[in-house]
Image (cartoon, rainbow, N blue to C red; front, side):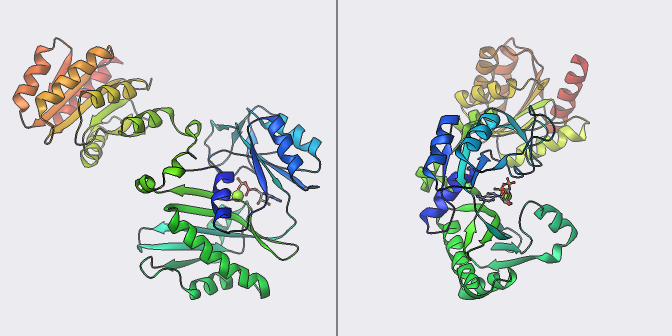
Length: 399
Ligand code: ADP
Ligand code: MG
């Protein structure tokens, strides 16, 4: 799960991490009111979308040369003018894809006199099984270019989670950022606080780009991108409230309501499978037969009629789906129960695309009989290869 910059900053501020003052706004009036609460004279109006690269982003609807998604304003009137221009527009950045993201929220924050911009990120490094702290003196909007052209300017510090954050990690970070004097001390303290926040909030990623040194010698978090480990959300009920579903794929949101693991893909064969491994194998074998899966969908071990129906509806709400392959292993759930679910669901959703079903496991014969007797145009398959060949052929025929 991801959150907006302003939410990440509120979470960090609550852990004693220095961030500039700012307020989120859902309308022009709220943006103006937010600016009224800030000292001025420099304000920054920032688009809140779940994607980075906003500063260099472009608004689709605005003329060439219009300013991007992070704008300096020198008066409350300028804040108003920028808010009027930005609300409801589509911002395209290197991270949004060509379709962009609609700006429904702004963050109005204190303008900071920046002396230097740094890059700092924490993430879970699967390779080493450690928390990686990644730092660079070359922070700011060109960090991707820095990583590509001069990777030696990026330092990685690994922290063993069992041992935890040690003073030498802080010193290594401050050294990597070439911080001196009081800034060096601030850097060490900040590193520890960020690590503690990362662990306390069960983050999977925390990226601060830029971290800045101000003209008056303070380290400040100027931008923050935070994502959480979904598997840990059960112990952070309060974070659940920060979820902004308008930022997520509507089908994936619907799937999560039914406890289904769903990821939309680019192909045209919808897949309904139980178990992540079987789902991966099913996608592979569709590709082997020269077609592309339209989604990954794992209905889980306890798939019942309700889940199967919900899964059908989600798959069919994707207009690119031209055929469905159901591949279910009846282990915990018997094949006859699954077949009942498939038949009921196919009737309920008024299925108009070819459906190939491969069942295997407990009571498979009873299950196949239910499908055959349903009167629905369901094609039965005997094994995975057979199923993939059949659905690919059916979709080609229908095209
Ligand atoms: P993004 O990474 O999405 O482009 P940032 O929040 O990093 O957005 O903003 C882009 C740039 O805008 C920063 O690198 C910084 O130079 C400038 N900036 C952002 N916030 C402020 C601020 N509060 N005061 C002054 N400059 C800012
Ligand atoms: Mg940034």
